Length: 73
Image (tube, rainbow, N blue to C red; front, side, top):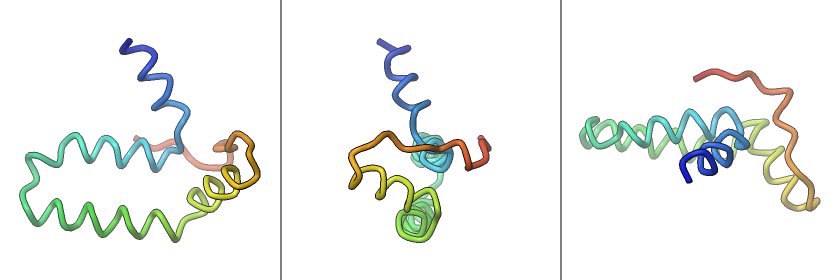
């Protein structure tokens, strides 16, 4: 079960993985941290090349290609 979940997470874009990690820690960040997280999430959803690849791959009904993007954790 945990390995299946990890495989799903690993298939996501690097930025999505970072945001997931931040969301796990959000309970300790307080209100200001949560507001910053919400703002960054919105910005990333609309203004990154990763977001464009995700949207385009969905619309073209193909698997996304995350290989051009760096893996930072």
